[in-house]
Length: 213
Ligand SMILES: [Zn+2]
Image (cartoon, rainbow, N blue to C red; front, side, top):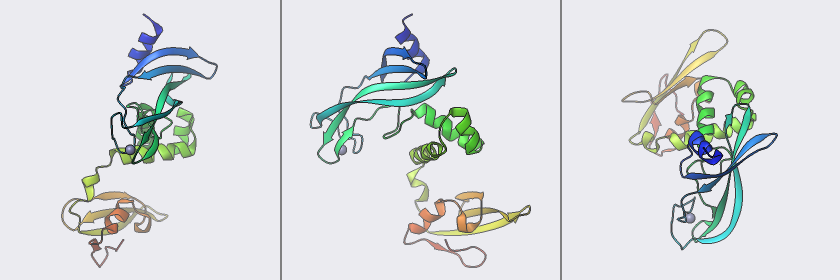
């Protein structure tokens, strides 16, 4: 079996053809080609020949490690000039726009962030502290259901202390239905859901123990 075929089956990257593989002291570099030839704007999704090719650039993404080696995906992409958005690099199915890591890598980081503290993730995956934060933000934004606040008019926020040393559990709930958010911390520092809820002009909160957000 050819090495390119072996890597294609190993990586299973959507929309990519493996062209070449090289081994360096630091990493395995997998050079791929984007199978889609149609021009697509990464910002507005517009397609077609109205998007003029402005330039071409080599782009690299860190992928999940292969054994003890880092794995880097490399691909030449077109810079497309969109009349609405300006010059943008064309999107690829294996990575989120603007990311330096593949979707598989980012999804693993986000999953680990639910299971453990940030420091062990940095050691395990050999990434920086800030990188973990940026990846979690990107994956969360990608998976959040934008309809989650639809129909939300009035919310209640309450907190309960547990153990010692001021540990609190804060719940955010609409006045009817299930809790929207529940997490550790005081109401003053409670989950971002609250801020989104109150950004709605119609959002109100009940008085009493529940607090306005
Ligand atoms: Zn555009």
